[in-house]
Image (cartoon, rainbow, N blue to C red):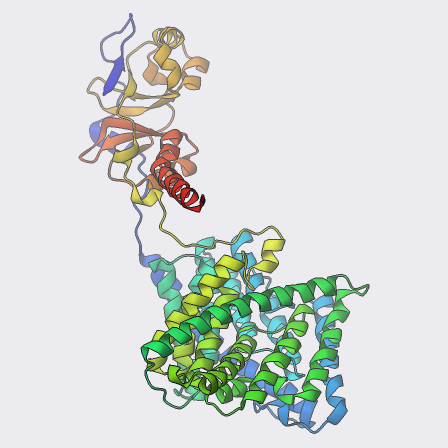
Length: 615
């Protein structure tokens, strides 16, 4: 109900209000949210170009890794991407990763410390804390340091550095052009997704990775540019590498019910392993922190372990994409799979904990795939009635360990499918990765991607739910009891009324209406008490700004944003068919009160669960 206050000295209406048309133009409404606009076209065009650039950079990074691998292990000048496993250096192989670690440590100390690690946590930190601004130096220093680390035997994949580099290029473009922080985040994610798609030819999982680890949202205005950038990156992969699967494997048959259940249980087990791998990696990192040496020397110490393990088992050196193919194709026996799993884990975890530059995805896939393949072979021997396929067990396990360690659930499922193109693997992949995700979420608060930045006090979103305020309309939350003033009332009368009326103290702002009941503006208690005008002047003379209003059909999110932009604590609610007819008022308290149903539901669920726990 609208209440009009009339003082004892009310006069006839004073012609203070403009014409209705002018008043309509003066009313300041919030912007209605639009999922897409023309601005998205420009961001999308930049993202597509970024995808092409990321494809070229991925090719150059691969060539650079090949160059350093050939120089370090074979003493020849060649850009061909080769494995260091076939070297004939003997004991000298131990020295190669040490030299690489020394170079990377020096680059980190006198270049940028941000090149240390696999790059995704650092990109997440820039998104969350620095408006997606990555230092320009990272665009060339990160791929160069990674190429040196991997080319000298580092047990990493090329995907981490190219994801970080693609994101850095996207951020750099966003810093050089006039874009918002939100658009710069989209460009960063587009570059990262394009880089991953360019390496593996897996555009869908690249988009999912961007959503789960960088964007922290799923909106059309960010999803479309990222998706088209990934398509461009995958197109460049097809141009340079062909359109076949990254990890080809023999066709697998659809699993039966017993095998499917076994794969899900395997996923849960591997999820626990993923938790253990994460804790092991950070325990090693903590151990390096306690060393009485400057951190620039740590990669060399890590390289000593990498070289020693590489001497025992050369397959642990370098990227190891061929190892993944061999594992899921059933080309390695039980002893070889067990050795590859344990020694790759030792080499990679020490190298990553030492702070050198490299990725996590390929090593985790190698470790998980070898573990799953070994368990699959044991299941065939001990429980043949389950009809387990060791190759499918390896595929399921390599995806599940990444799901458990990173909790990038959808990325893990789709990536394993896209890189092998095995349709019968989708169902067991989905079940196993979900089980790994569940186990990881119950056992570990942070992930291998977030633990590092969480220790620095960065809060990383873990759930991407719809904006609660965006689901509630203003008409559902506003107060209909509006106390308004008439523009022709004298200031003195209103001040007396404010001092004497108890209900006046409950309101901090009052709509001011003209003689026709049309809104002219809003005056606060401070405006009315501290105005310097003649006390016999009309209240309307105190109005200094156009009215800030909101329609009943606006969402509370739009209203809250309008309040923040205008720096006010209340908005006048007007009818949709008449923008100057006041129907209510919306305050900050109303916005907070709108959360009450959600909180009551959460408390009810919590009490219900607590009652079930009581014996």
